[in-house]
Structure formats: structure tokens, C-alpha cells
Amino acid sequence: MSGTLHRKTIVITGASSGIGLACAEAFARHGSNLVLGARRFVDLCAIAQSLEKEYGIRAVAVQCDVAMESDCKALVQQAINTFGGVDALINNAGISMRALFADLDLAVLHRLMDVNFWGTVYCTKYAMAELLQSQGSVVAVSSIAGYRGLPGRTGYSASKFAIQGFMESLRVENLKTGLHVMVACPGFTASNIRQTALNAVGSEHGETSMNEDKMMTAEEVAARIVQGIIRRKRTLIMTRQGKLAVLMNKLLPDWVDRQVYKLFAKERNPLVS
Ligand SMILES: NC(=O)c1ccc[n+]([C@@H]2O[C@H](COP(=O)([O-])OP(=O)(O)OC[C@H]3O[C@@H](n4cnc5c(N)ncnc54)[C@H](O)[C@@H]3O)[C@@H](O)[C@H]2O)c1
Image (cartoon, rainbow, N blue to C red):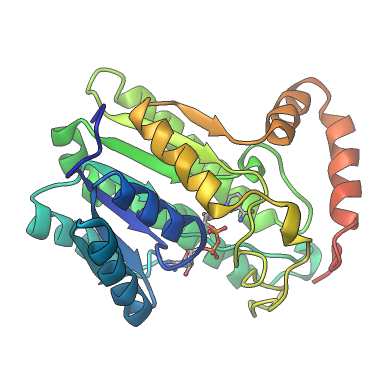
């Protein structure tokens, strides 16, 4: 898919809040039809209806827990049934964590992998034939945590590294098929992700660990993702700080270890859960 997004079919996971919701609105503004997946079906139906009304597009809500393979299959099937295919898949659904590995219940790490990594794999697998047919775009919303391990986030970093390895392999497999494979790495973005981050025993923290006021907005991230698809970018590292972190991590990884340690020690909820 290139050029216009008008009347293209975009599937977005985790579309009921944050970056996913902002993506839904950004694509709707471009006239795309939407298939929105999230667990909170009632909220999602209201979002779909309001986008249809405001932008004159068609939007379908599908209840989807991306950790469930059958839900991901049904999400893509709904796009095929309603719109006849898929032009772009935005693997956005994700959760985070804040807990030291020494304290961590391994079920938390499994949950991070199930949602962040396997959710991306399932949706991509079931959309693959349609994406190849449309020469469309598959996007994974990753993180700087997919380039560099962060303290208190073993499961989160592992899941994002895994996503990036998966996407890189997928890109190379499809160098000649016309499929566009993009990894989007926002910087810190104001959203619910730190509120819902899991603690050592798998409960939500219920509060953010950072000052959300100075972060990127979900709308800025969504605008970058839309432009990245139009321009068929490979990777979007969205902040200067992020670009610097990735570069310095290659050149001086020990120095970055110390900087990252200091940065996260400043969190209101520091390295303990
Ligand atoms: N906010 C940040 O600072 C930041 C930075 C880098 C990357 N990201 C990534 O951006 C993506 C979106 O996060 P966000 O910041 O908008 O946070 P958010 O919590 O507002 O959004 C995450 C969405 O994923 C959904 N979700 C969670 N588990 C799910 C499941 N099992 N099935 C379906 N949906 C599920 C949530 O309900 C929510 O709608 C995530 O992949 C996150 O890792 C966020």
C-alpha cells in the first residue's frame, strides 16, 4: 500500500486507549476504514460509532484479547468479512511491568510475552495472506526497551526485543514481495501504560512512576505512524533521546547501563515494585 490511505482497511489492536485510540482517529482522518480490537467491547463500540459519525468512514469493533490466538484470528476474519481484506495491521496492544526480576513471579513474564510478543505474532500470522495480497503494511509498536534492557522491565524489554527480531526476519523474508514491515518506537508517551504496568505478583500498579506531563502525546505518535506507513519507513525512533540511546548503546553500552540505572532510580516508584 502506498500513497493514499483513503478507504484502505486498517486493523488496530489495543484501540480503546492511548496510542491505539490515537491511531484509530489519525487513520479515520485520512478516510481509512477501521477494524478495532480491544478487550473492552462496550467502550470500543462507542469509539467506532463516534469515528464513523465524525469522519464518514466505516469502523467495526471486535472484542479481542491478543493473548488469545482465536481472538486474533477472529479480528482479522472480521476485516476480511466486512471489507474484503487488510491493507495495514497495527500491532499496538501492549502491557508493561515494574518489578525486579529477583522478586518476579514468572507468570508475569509469561503474560508480557503472551500479550506483547505472541499477540503481535498471532495477528500478523492471520493477516499475512491478506497483507501479501494488498502489498500492505505490518507495524509493531515497540519501544527503546526493544533496543536496550531497562531495569525493572525484564519481561517488557524481552518482549520488545523479541518483537524486533521477529519483525526484522519478516522484513528480510519479504524484501521481494512488496510487504512493508515497520517497527515504531515511541519515546515516553503519556498514556495508561505505567498505571496498568504489572507488579511482581501480576497486579496492576495503579499509578504512574513518572511525570506524564512532559512526555510525547499519543496523537504525536499516531501521526508519525501514519506518515511512516505512507512513506513505507523501516523504523521510527521518535525522539532525539531515543535515537541517542540507540546509538550510544552500540558505542558505549557500559556507560548507557549507568545512565539508564540513574534515570530509572529517579522514578517515584523506583526499581522496586
Ligand atoms: N506510553 C509509552 O511511554 C510507550 C513507549 C513506547 C512504546 N509504547 C507501546 O505503545 C503501545 C501502546 O501503549 P500505550 O502507551 O498507548 O498504553 P495504553 O495502556 O494506553 O494502551 C495499551 C492498549 O493495549 C490494550 N491491551 C493490553 N492488553 C491487551 C490484550 N491482552 N489484548 C488486547 N488489548 C490489550 C489496552 O487495553 C490498551 O488499549 C504498547 O505496545 C506499548 O508498549 C508505549
